[in-house]
Amino acid sequence: MEELRKIWNVQKSFNRNFVNFDNLTDEERQRQTKEYILHLFSETDEILREINWKMHRKKDIAVNKQNLTEELIDVFKYWCSILQLWDITPEEFVKEFHRKSSVVEQRYKQEIKLNLISDENVIGIDIDGVLADYPRSFINFISNELSIDFKDFSPKTHDLCNELGMFIKDKQKIVELKHKYRSSGYKRNIPVIKDAVFALKELKELGYTIVLLTARPYKEYPRMFADTMEWLDNNGFVYDAIIWDENKENKIIKQFPKMKFMIEDNLYNALKISEYGYKVILFNKTYNKNDDHVDNVFRVNNWIEAMEMIRDE
Image 1: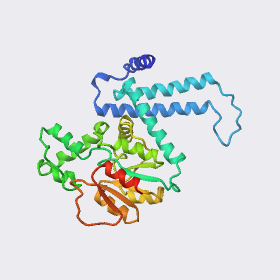
Image 2: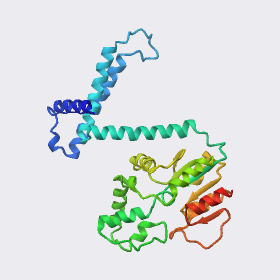
Image 3: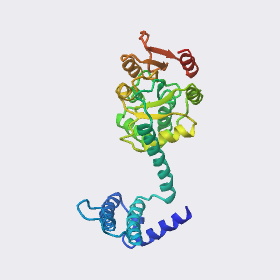
Image 4: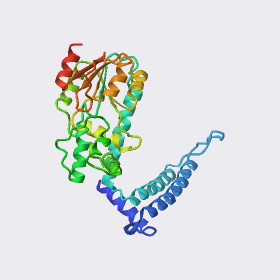
């Protein structure tokens, strides 16, 4: 790390000949980023000139490692300069590199190595409301941000923003808080629902393939994938795959059609999934009350009851 800091400082010292890092506006950062990227494109072309890459030309260039290394260093220097424009430190770079590497490894594992299509021992598990204490964590976040006491507030529907409108008249403020909640990394510290960690460990011991399904908008908030994995790993959850989609029933049918159980807290999702003949364990919540009996939807109050039902299968 110390050597990386030295490299960082050397490059930044040189860049100060062209950029005033102390008084950069966002507009200037964006303009300068464009300039660096254009230079970076040019340097990557220089790399191609050092290797045999043209399909229609005879490959007779002897690759000079020293020349190639020099061109690669030029690329690195422009890349490093862009990071510095946005005040990204060596420590932040290393941390995010490892976070992103974990995401890539997980995607490879579940997309290439796992064969879920024929797996008859898949259990699908929702994250928020089943493993993570949501929506309570979002309510607590808003409470801290606005100094409003929501201790006795229990949502009656899944439309949390609408229900919070009873306390916060400015709907745009709720939208802004939701954005901050998702983009700030707060989800890395959501409390865990009681017995969830131990339940998933037992499911693995029983031979189940654990697929986590979530509607978290990771495409809109790219950091959410890494934040979610960090939360899962830090709390000791075991799992085989994470699938991101609001239309969970479609993912189930396409990717693991022989699923044994789905564990949910969202009544709408439970009903949709049960319509395809899948058994759904639905955690009782204040926001999913419904007295109607539905075939294939089995209500439980906690993970202890859920595991009893699965063991009896």
